[in-house]
Image (cartoon, rainbow, N blue to C red; front, top):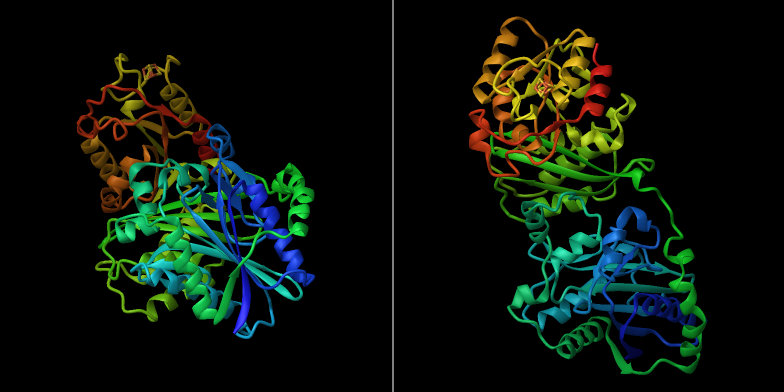
Length: 517
Ligand code: SF4
């Protein structure tokens, strides 16, 4: 039986842990040390981006600084992760010629993930490998992994979520939710799990380490012999620590945040709403990650998590995405009442369509502030009316509950009226929900081809059905300020009795009106 050494380097800073990765990798490559298995823990808490990732794109830097969360970059690939003292990192630094070394990288990932799965079995957790490099329990991720390869050796590492502070993780990383609303946080919580949630208590760290170590030894058929850091490794750590603490290392990969964008869509299906949130890398034309939520029912529940997983790292190509999604559903027994595979294709495409807005002069930060009804943004051109919500008028204005505006300049409605009239469009104040429906029907009967309007995202989502039923294509522009939905006053607003004032996004309205004929 092969003998591997085992190092428990304890709780260290991110820079020390990453320096040790480099040192162990180098030492194994030079044959100074045998194959090694290591446990690592982090304090202070840390956010680590993958080797090829940019901190600006992946990390909420201000939040991390305010909360004394370390930021660093791994020597291994993969995505950004948040680690606090409760997470346990494990890694293998080994020669590529160890007896069980598979031919393909994917198989090596699977083999090494199975070691953790094997260890977790001892704690009663039924974990499984999920291609290409995750470990999951019933569709929820419990461990992410990644690795790097040298000429003769590889380093493969993972993190086991033992206990988990979801809120801090969400606030530290730029994951595909932007406003951190309760519902969105909950949707992320559904996609991850940790040891404590699975077995109802947090075992002692020494127990977790023992089962994982045994899991690795059994699957790899090796004997693991404990050792301390060698003198050489300690000297190297002193030499290298400065480099791994430096901005040159941490921020060495720079990609502007503007190149990484969240694109969102909402579509209505007979089975419910599908909300899609994609993080895309625009210059490289890739979907970095996808979050699909909604009020539809999917059986098995993990279907949507698996779908998100296959969309990760996809090329932003319509045919490729369609093939992936259709292939995904063909291979599985899945029931999603009232939702077809084509609906998911449409949801993704509707989000990706927003990239086209850029060519039409809409700034990247505004693409999710535009909603469309029954047609695409670039097809809605001939719009002779601009529908303005009464809630944007000053509460004490005499026109608040009336059509019209004297353009006194005291609120954004004045600017909206002027912009519309300059373009020979008719501005129409919408006084309540019934007035909106009646106006849309009248416009349709008069042969109007499309409308431009302004409303909040929550109103659009809630009344998407009604907009679709009215059947008039349109563009809607989001509004600023807390809306009736944020304040829980939807009923008042429905009846035209919402007392607060919202502000129209005049700059965006100007740009959209410029695009219209
Ligand atoms: S701009 Fe129009 S809506 Fe706003 S306060 Fe003046 S009159 Fe009223």
